[in-house]
Image 1 (cartoon, helix red, strand yellow):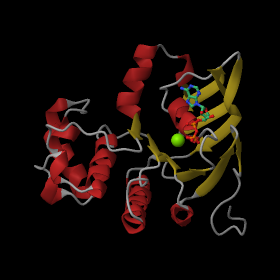
Image 2 (spheres, rainbow, N blue to C red; image 1 turned 180 degrees about the vertical axis):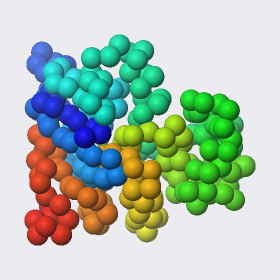
Image 3 (cartoon, protein in one colour; image 1 turned 120 degrees about the vertical axis):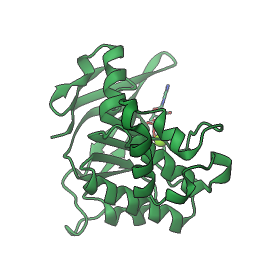
Length: 229
Ligand code: ADP
Ligand code: MG
């Protein structure tokens, strides 16, 4: 398994008590598979991605990337692992205003030598060849989100974590982004975890899991298996 969460619990301070955002969560995502995460607002979906991304260390439990327990690493080694093996796409495209689309990707490069070639190849893969020299204000919302997806793939990650990438887009543009993520997941063989609020996106997923008050369920439900959420 490429991405494995084992018995992960995460709490946040909440007045005098603790709020349980992830409650003994178990999850496995293989390479080339897209797992969709659904669930109400506040149920722990973004916390799940943040823990999988090593941005937050859980209270207990283990996160493994390709068998390596990343929860045990120092913060510095976690940062290195994020840069090399984990691609992250946030809800809002967080691009640098002064850089062109190609430069947004190039600055992420772990190996600067072939960065320009790789950036242009990835922009082509997300349908933005003609926009490589444009800055964020010259791109549409959907195009900006495509740049962030291409940027997340810059160092050929094994894990791709995507948090509600279509929330600022209309339905059709959102569906196109999900199609793109499903295609890239197969082509680039990433273990992809996608948080989405749009149920029509779920047909593109290999598997659907649901968060409720920090509890993950539905691990065995797959689209077409006759028990869609
Ligand atoms: P979702 O992405 O499903 O909306 P989140 O993972 O953002 O859910 O939040 C899960 C729960 O944890 C919510 O009750 C939220 O208010 C709480 N929470 C999230 N981040 C923090 C934080 N940094 N400090 C305290 N509570 C938080
Ligand atoms: Mg969220």
